[in-house]
Image 1 (cartoon, rainbow, N blue to C red):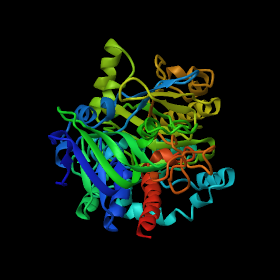
Image 2 (image 1 turned 120 degrees about the horizontal axis):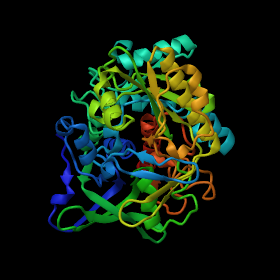
Image 3 (image 1 turned 45 degrees about the vertical axis):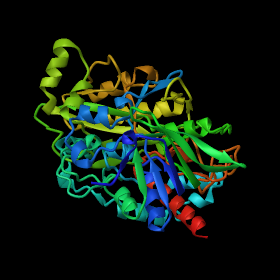
Length: 503
């Protein structure tokens, strides 16, 4: 068990000092903490969420995971503007951050995205070659490996059968795992501890090297003196609500794309890019019913993907959910719904996400949580529609009796000829079921304060001494699962900060 200081249990005001204070312990903060601590830097990490040991959360029921580890118990939602669905945001709030609630998928940033960063935005520091070493380091630390075909569920095998008939290539997924036995509940805590989230990899090494990690500490603002950051202050989330202040030479912000911009705004940042340019990778799924049993929960949660439609902004990924969670999202009411739940073992599931434009914004709001707004562009809506069509056509080609598209109130589809007629661009996006795990871009890298919030090394334009290292710094959407890219970006930023502090 890691040595974590429980802020909620501290009985008096805390005055601390360190060379670096890190706000957030997820895929960005944990990586930088480990890099700096191993270099001999005095590091304090402050995490808003509680510390839940792995042997505890690995035994949670899915609903317990949402309640005890998920932010807002999994109810955070994005308000859709115009022809845009309400989008559920799944994020973690615990030591280890959202890495506790990922499916473990590990993609590198696609080459075409690197090329756009260089050609369209002049960010030569972010070309593919420059980030190679950081990706290699993150993959090594996280035990990233290819999921063997034998670990695929029958849900995925059925999809692959249909894709083969349609000439769509399917590739094996890579995930941060060691010892996976296929319980298909990675997002809710692996029962056998096979998923290598940062609470199992980076954080223990950071602590062993001397980093101090505090849980249940909400940071409210960055302290400033003579035009430079000098630390942070916040509150201990226990009954007493005592304050905490940490003086530091550098403030590393790693609170995620939703809360990092809020912290900067509360600390006086006024740049027009702060909290803007939010991308979400809007996610969708299609359910297929087969005549015989599929038992899709037996196998790896995510084991295969399709990038053949990358140029159209679409990535398709295998997927499944614990039966109790899956059943809650099935269509129908009364007898129709009961019948579908009764045939849960006959259902297959495959999902996808869209490489979207930066149509979102994070606004300070009443209370702790922000108001998040998002406008789906017509181009992105077309990509979602096309992705749903592909999934439906593929499962029907695989022999599904019927498929359920993610539109509220839509009848099941039973023939491929129905797909383009029923699922088309004229449908209202407001009727889509939509979810995201990958908010990015609200403190994005730019060449100047007019374009972004930080430079290519995560340094804030508005306040020297502040470095942002989480998914909020990405210049654009990346079109793939963001866990590994965040760790790789944090690695290169952590290396640079380490070298600056050494010199």
